[in-house]
Amino acid sequence: MTTEVWTSTRGRISETTRTTLQEALEEDNRKDTPSFGSEDLEKIHRSGTEAGLLGIYNFPGSVYATDGSNDRGVMGAGFFKLDEHRGGCCQLGRGVEGKSSNRAELGAACLALEDSKRQQDRKPVILLSDSACFLSSSQKWTGEGKSPSMHGNPDADIMRDIVQFLRERIDQGLLTIFIKTKAHRGDPLNKQADRWADEGRQSENIRWSLPTNRPIFYWTDNNTTHRSPMNPTVKKRIDLQVSLQQLKTQTVSTANFLIREDNARDLLGKFHKDRSVWIRARRRVLQ
Image (cartoon, rainbow, N blue to C red; front, side, top):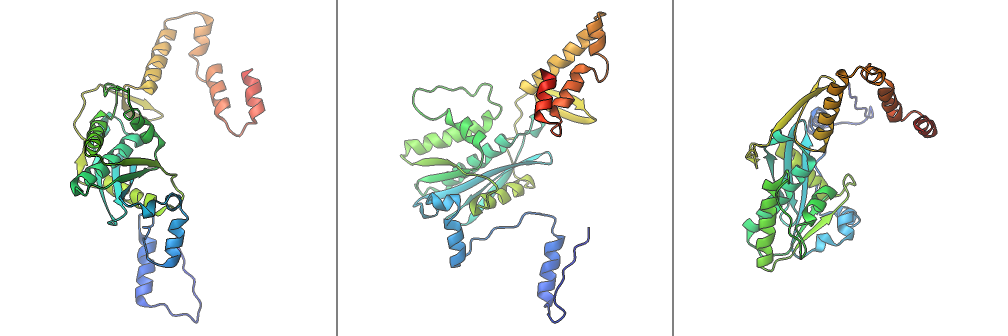
């Protein structure tokens, strides 16, 4: 694809401007880097964002925006600290056992809590996250009368560190607030955390990489190899494969029909997934 820049014939572009435009056009990263300027218009913009309306920019403690990235088979985690205008990131290991955005989000929150402990400033902390899954998975560890277990948690290695950091802050009487924010709304804090998460996928600092020795299942679907530890999706796929193997041992007419390619069951599934078909027509066929 060719990009053209049109200017007035009477205009003059300096060599510095031309070089800057060329570098911007040749940049592989499609995401721009948000800036925290001190101009009045920029302050007005920030005050109108979700974080600004919540008064987070005037919070007397430390504000961390966290985000995770799971792309191209690599997980990254990053955070951005508002009062010091700096960030941190890392790459998450153990991807061979399955990759998930929730694991990346947990890693980002743990990095932020670890950084707040390292500062030793004894300030209240706000953690901003755009992941509802991360907040829901952390919620069961808060409140009285609850006794959850790490057993069965696929990200227990990270969650254990988060719970430890939170307990230490509670023992010191320090306030920690988790706030869910909306993603892809142009919020500068969320965009800065997103950039650090992308940086984490390329980082040589790999954290939480010890294996759990769980069995890993491999399967091929449409010439694409998948791998994952045991989960509901893998269980359904195993049940389906066992059912198909059992059909081959049967000789009744129903079994002969179901093992044929594009049988009625397959066609119904494809028809129901076809969003171009009118919804009433799909419901009618299923009835």
